[in-house]
Length: 331
Image (tube, rainbow, N blue to C red; front, side):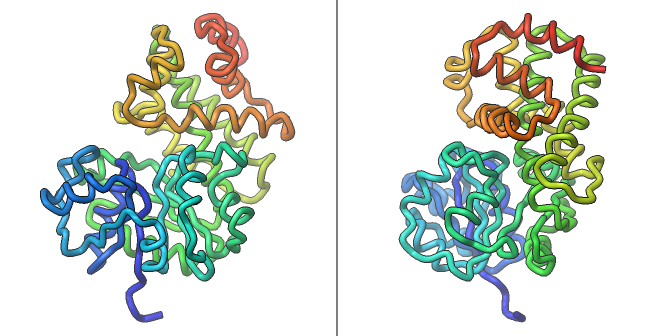
């Protein structure tokens, strides 16, 4: 296929905006779907997203903006989904056009709550898209830093390496380095699990634990992630790669991490509801905690950190007491 493939970005949040920015560097035109008609009009007039990464200026001649999901899907060969996993099912109900022969890449770091599946599995089982047409965009990459054009690394995973190469080619640039992987299941689970560990890091910080404890928490987190992913999908992988450990570290330590911020509020004594209301963005880890905990009832991996976060968020247990017990289980 020598002609340039057509890309569509699905979503109007910060990560969707960052991906649109990366693609526009390398492509003459992209389709960009978002629900909000007012935001579309604002981008057309003022050349930036008013709600997210508003410093990023777009060449609107390159943007085929639409609030019709079917139009975006019909336009594209490659469709990149970047909406919170909790909203995916609702958005997909608007879809009447076929996804046959479309290549789906998920930039969603979470689990679809309705099915308790990671996004790749969800598309495979719900829409019968073969795994070789499904990929994942992951890695330690906060949208806010892409906006600032700070050097970032992405891992593009797909069962079909040639498709991963295509997506990597059109996302990479001066400040975006890409590598490809064949571990589509493992990278996607890692992307989902690290949000839970980031909430744990935030809770610890909110409770007054220091950097020493946080490093122990992260060290245990990566080992716990390794055990969990191995139970889900056994294959040769290096858990210390950027897509796993790197992503965990940036989400656990960065000031841009919304999951850490959410955990920090819980640690400081906010209720789950009040913390969610105060944050304008979705903390994926909140939904991921429930899904991972439920999945692990079958897998039975040893996951004290996930269990602790679940007890605090879903069983209403006191964060201070739960973490006091957790400290005895870590090493």
